[in-house]
Each structure stands twice: as structure tokens, then as C-alpha cells.
Length: 86
Image (tube, rainbow, N blue to C red; front, side, top):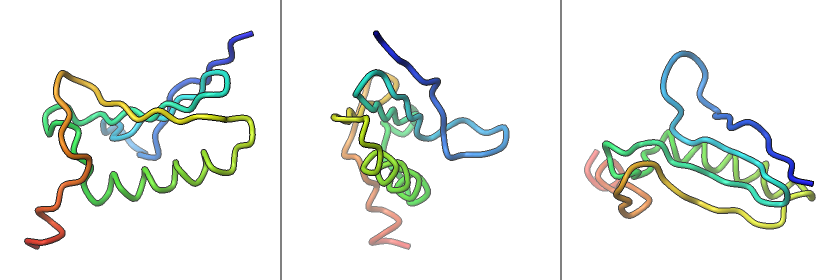
């Protein structure tokens, strides 16, 4: 039996989701939705991803997590420009 929960995001309002979180059977799928930025995680996305990872960690029904991105290109997962050059 395949169970799939609808994707959701921690973002509220009418904006595009930065990270979508989907559960399918025993697998969690984290999809970064920033194709125009090669799916680099900014500070807000890192906060959201951290919260989703905690939820994943605490869900005993999930065995594996997959991190993926939308679009054709994926870069280093974290943008350091705002960390080192405020």
C-alpha cells in the first residue's frame, strides 16, 4: 500500500514554497524550489529546512529522506554570500 501526503511548505501566504515536504510510504522528500537561484538555500530556507528535518527525525514512520531540487541545475546547497559578506 502506497501512502502519499500532499506536499506542504512552512511558508505561509501567497508566495512560492521554498521547500516542499512530501511523505511517501517510509520516505520523506524535501524539494528545494528555487530554480532561478540554482536551488541554493538562503537563511530563511535553512531555517525552514531545519524545522522540517526535526519533524522528519521525530516521525518514526519515516526511514529515509531525499533532498532534491526543481529545475535543471543544482548548486552548493548553502549560499555563503550573506554569511561572509553581509
